[in-house]
Image (cartoon, rainbow over all chains, first blue to last red; front, side, top):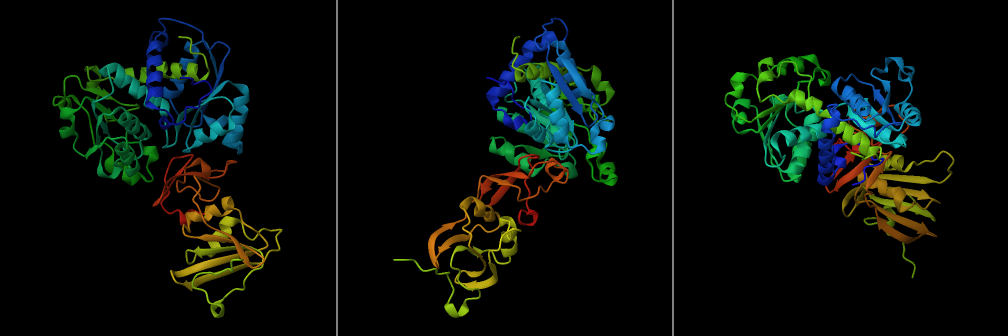
Length: 310
Length: 162
C-alpha cells in the first residue's frame, strides 16, 4: 500500500486493509518509539506543527515521533503570536507552512479545517483534531491499543462511555470499530447520546449498537471500556454541562463486576471519570494508550513522507 | 414537423406570460420557488439584457407550479441541474424560433458546490476562507447531502441556499 503524499484527514478515508497496514507498521515502530532502537529515516525532513487549539498528548507525541525518526519540527502551540491574530486566513497560513516544510500537522477549532488545509498544501496534511470533527490519529492509536492489548480487534465487546454527543474521538472510533465487527454498547447521559448519523453508520457496517444509561449493567460483559471526558468547551451553555458532569465514575467498586481482563481506555485528559485508584490495576491501559500515539504517528509520518524503511 | 411549445395545463387564454422566441423555459418549478431558482441560476446577470419572465402559483393538471422564462439564453444542463435541490420535478425546454427543440428533466449532480451553506456554524466553510461550500449527494430520494468539510448533513436544505 502506497501512502506517500496521502493526507490523513478522516478515518473514513481509509479501508480496513489500509488501517491494518498502518497498525502492523506501527507495531514495528515500538522499539524505536521507546528509544531502544534508532534509525533516522526522516533525516532532512521538516514537519510543520500548527496547533490553533491547546493540546498536550497529540502535539508532543507528533513531535516525539518526528524526532525519534531523525526529522525536525517547526510550528506553534498557541496561535496568539501568529498572523492569524492579524486576520490571516487558514488557507494562507497553510500555503506558507507548506512552502517551509515537507508535511503539516494541524489542529484547529473549526470542523473541516484539516480538509481545507489539504486543499491548499502540496505536501501531506495530518489532522490532529478539527473542532468536534475528526481526529484520525487518535482513532488509529485507539485501535492499535485494543489490538495490542486484546490481540485482536474483532469480536470484542466494547463500551463507549460518556460524552457521546460532542466527543469527536468516539464518533470516529464507533465507525472504525464497526469496520472490524465488534459488539458496541453506548453508555451516556440521555442528553449526550450518540448522534443518529453515527448509529446509522455503524448499522450500515453491520453493527447494531446497544444504547443504555446504566454502566453497572453494561460492564459485566465488556472486554473494553472506553471512557471519555465530558468536554466543557463543547457545550453551548454552562447549565447543560453542570447537569451531566460527573454522571459516571469508574472506580474499583464498579470494576468488581467486570471481567478480569477488561481494559479501561481513555483519550485523556481525564477529570473525574476515572478514579486514580484504578491506575494501579491491570485494567488501566490509558497511559499505555497515550504512549501508543508515538508509534502510530511515527508510522504515519514515515508512510506519508514515503520513507517506509523500518 | 416542428413541435409546438405546450406547457401542461396552459390554454392560450390563460397565458400569463408571453411565449418566447428563443431561450429557455423552466417549467414545473415547485410553487413559491421561482425566485430561489433565479437566485441559484445567477439570474439576472449584471451585464445581461435578456428578458426574464416569472409566473408563480400557476394552475396546471398536476396542481400549482411556478414557471420561469429566460429569453435569448439557452441554459445548459450542468447549469440547471442545481435547481433539482429544491425542484426535483422541474423540466427545461430549450426554445428556438418559438419551438421546443430540446426538453429534459433536471438531474441532481453528485456534488453541490457554492449553492448551499453548511448548517454547522463552526464548519470551516462558514469561516472567511477562500473556498466555496461543497456537499456530496449521498442519497437522492429522500435527498441527503453531506458537507465535504465537516461531514455534517444539513436537514433544511431549501432554507440553506446561499
